[in-house]
Length: 384
Image 1 (cartoon, rainbow, N blue to C red):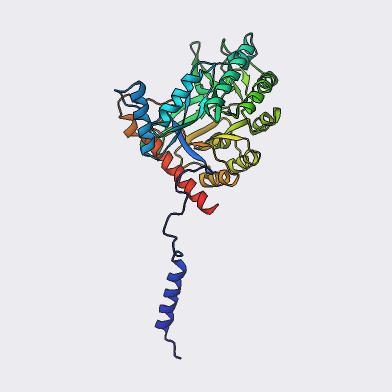
Image 2 (image 1 turned 120 degrees about the vertical axis):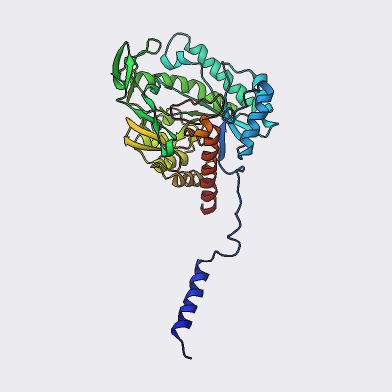
């Protein structure tokens, strides 16, 4: 058989095209395309969709839930006000969102500063936390999130400009701020009167007392607690050291009371801000079933703990796909919040626009985060 150069090239082209062609059925998106019982669930805050300037009460719930559902978000987080929580009020809240297509699966609890600072009245506050946990269990709320800040270092935040004039949120431990008529670096700011200075030993003793009281109640109620790390993770904030300002602190926390009810909010952004590998950290806590909530965001770090920028979820240093894939591998099935939306003109031009953070955004930027996070999740679920 005579083979011409032309026939050889044609044969090679056909073989190459066949090798590049996807197998049969590969063009069809495999399930699960969206969240299910055995997958993580993307979430937003109940107010992240907004209810519109003319809505309030039940109308705001309907409008806000509709905006979440329109971008494929069917799970949400919220707050609940004063403790102890009222069972009727909590049931009404959960039911009002549920009938509009949104499941509230995590509520932030607060109102126990005396326990945080070991002040008179702490036992009464802890009793109110326990009552709230019991109410959550009766109502079927699976996760309660909380903070344990000696001081939150928000004075170090400032707005930065990102791509095409969009907003980033910067943090600088050496940022100069106004204090008593003088310019002072944030790291040198004095303690606030209502907080005071606190050492690590003090704060660890205080949270140990708290956890030993509340975790048995949480286990009995079938509720998981998620402690959010220090964000920003400044080494010392207003004269106080921070127990959740390092991965070593996160690890110490879950050893105080060994229980799935004593877990953390895993924040891959904060993890990178501390110079740590989010994939390794997700593996450590996920393999121990101690991740009870997830914050999914990206950063660029100039100096761990002290200088970084919160950037668009697709442009930071974190490999967000690797983080998502690790969460899938450790069989994490609770909420993932693609938080801290970046500031964009479309949001900033809306009436009543506001952002919790300088350089932050709102609903349209959240939609970007959700779309990106869902793509990461679908890809991770597909490849395993």
